[in-house]
Length: 384
Image (cartoon, rainbow, N blue to C red):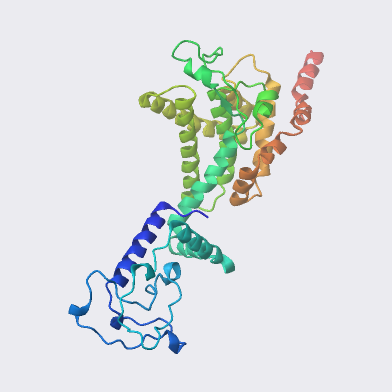
């Protein structure tokens, strides 16, 4: 286990202070810490006048470091001086207890930290007491961690990247290829944890392009599915914290992509795009909410406008697949706990993949009553 630099500096400083204190203390003022054996007791020394003590020569000290840190740098006390030997004989500098090395301090601290885990661990006890004493503060960090795990799962569903040679070619006119809407078209990214890369359902079955727009819209769609579940939290304040941190994670990653993949170095330009994305997120929540309440046709219209940019040549069967995926995913989260959802999404994207299975067969089924109006119109025409 490694020890941070600040801890090492503090330990070295404490060891030097202890060594300096010991070198400046006379034998008559110190006693051994042990009281169990008489042989460790310091004999009464005949104190010398200060004029007889040689300057620069440390006195003989039969004790260890002070009790507060003796477990880090102290050795066992040396045996009492033999009979007849002068008790006030000066001790050489080599007989003093040397300051512990960095490796020794790391080893001692690691062993203490490892042993403290027995019986619950001191870290667990400190975290428990801190959470009970400052619940509002610790809840913020817990919420931040949960939303980070949720967002990473959302961002890994349609990941993309721009090859490095194409990024550098933006300034020379040899950048990434453009689509009909003048968007940079990249390639599916395979290094994202929990992602299927080029085999993603959004690329293979729906035929979407690996662009920033598609990534953001697919990410928003999954964030909305989680938002529907977050609305069941017990109080409004907790829900707003989850909502805020979820959007903050998205904004941070989106800005990184603007800089690294698309060469947007001007902060003003990035802020403009981030503001537009925030407005889109607000509009998406309203449009998808209306679709969930009004019916599949309204929800399909919202998906078509956001994910396919209102393309008139869209394959509506693909739009229906997304609608079925959203309803199945929302229903699947109904009975799950928020902590369990974040843990499962952090481990794998199996939940999203399960919601995508069997959608083709469900979409091909004919809805009940879809032909009733046609039959009524046909019967009215025959009557005429």
